Image (cartoon, rainbow, N blue to C red):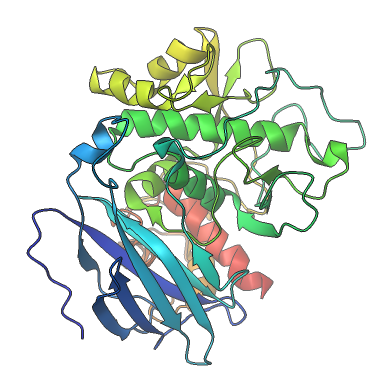
Length: 408
């Protein structure tokens, strides 16, 4: 069964890819089945040589259900689908509750072998079913001089260690997650991808700043724990290992992940606490539903944030991204020349060893049509806008993938 077209009034798109982490290669010929919440099989097929399926168009409910804070919505604001994937080697991953919203693109990546092979995706935090956040003081003590924080400004970490439970639960798993993937996971777990762009941007900035405050202050390590942050909403932010992201959120995170909120007189990322604004409302915390309403009224992300956190907040950019050989120095496009172009070409050549469909380039430092086309192919494989231009999001994604494959 491979005909996934349907005639539903509303639909969303699922893009699925599979990757073999032990080989550093796309997991081609992975058998995939997709069933709806009633157990009806809606798709069955195999991934191609890039480890991807053709986009699946799946039924979804009306967007009105995710655009209005109904106390008791008549149904979920998304459709749920279950995925079973089996690699060529027989590894099996099952994902229950993949969420599809109308007119959005859901991105599901399956890793073999993953840190978990049975994944259950809960309702988003905005639906008001998570434990209430325990308030904390905004200003945190600085870490001890022997800590790992690089002063004077925060550093974007390469990896976040997420403790899947409350801090005291020693039996809970620790998941190792790339920084950008962590932010995408939290945002996709907290809010709706159907919201206005500026509301999503404001919420992503709050999530980024909250996370970087935990990193910068070494909050949990200072208490004797071996992780960065927890998945408990009573202490931190919603997180589900292996869940689907949304392209509308993913692209914003890729564009903004080096930014964070701070106060004019502070070096710390703001401990940007937030709540739904309906079930729970707190002074000085961002209201998630309130941010959506302000975006509807024409507010941009910074104005939304200042409405809740005060007029003295500003946005800063981290000076360094850990694990990246060369930092972003500006947009590269047709006609660009120099060492940055040569570095880009060398990294794409390194990636092509693991992704054979990416052609080899002459590392001549000239951004010609062949380089632009190779960049566009990379963008297509990794769910970036296919412009052929190396902007910040593309540069860091290429660097991320290059570092990952070279570590193998």
